[in-house]
Image (cartoon, rainbow, N blue to C red; front, side, top):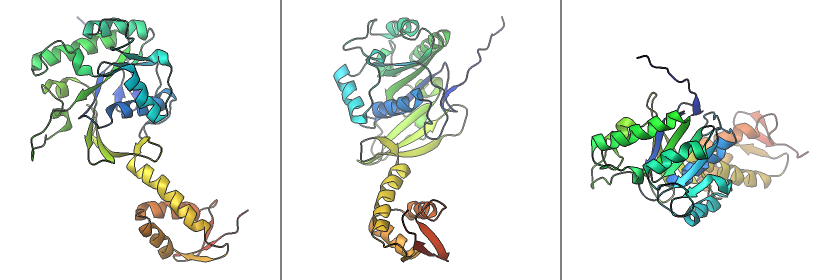
Amino acid sequence: MGYDRKSRSFLIDTIWPEFGLHVMSGGSGTWKTSLLFTMLREFQENRPVFGLSTNARPWVYIAFDRDLNETWDTLDMLKYDPPTSQIFSSYDNFPYQQNMTGVIQAMPKLLPHGGLMCIDGLQILNPNDNNSYAGVASFTRMMRTNAAKHNVTLLGTVHNAKAKQGEEYAHPRDKIMGSVAWGATVGTIMALEKKDELDVMLTICPRTSKEYKIMLTRDAAGQIVPRDEAEETEGNLVLNARLAEVPAGAEIKRSDIMAWALDANISERTAERWLTRQSGRSGRLQRTGRGVYQKMHEN
């Protein structure tokens, strides 16, 4: 019997192929739900996510590990206000059975033309032993098969197992709590690991391309952004303020700018990028010699 292969594209280039089951894994407090909504906000507007192009589709979110109040608290913190018709919780307003069968029934009802279904607390839906390879593989196969049937892509959050003191898993795919079948039978894994109170490391593990890491942080407005981006935004504000104190026509050396950055704990790389922009055609500095600039008069 032949196989009729369904053509598919990516919802997010290289990391979310259509009709698959992808997961976001991490321990408690690693911003899984916050990152999920942060990505959805960009995705629905066809804006890049981590520099990757997006291909927007209809989406719904279903929480099996929190009520609607907790979900909207997260959305309020992110200053994101999606339509209420796209947000469900098994505690409050999910109109189908609160199990795997109910979610499969919901696919063509909530997404009649296909799209992205996000499930917070995916492991709760597994009717089998979470430590059984065959049990987990059967669950993920059932979810993937039905999702593809209805042109639905699944993204679920799962918990990582706790590592013993001094021990670590060799690969992010092996960190998911329960059987290693989780890592073996899902598509892309986005693994989150808290580094300190301010930073979380995101490791993106596509099934068919090289994994890569992004350090995430929360900016002053509470949004989740790559740490370099947050640092650069805050660094630009500081350096702009210092430059505003310099009178027009005054000479400024590169070493002066690097000293400003050092005083404010701004990286040299951020300061260099700022200097490059300011000494460009639309900037406020004119290069007059090697490492020497003059502040131009404001228009």
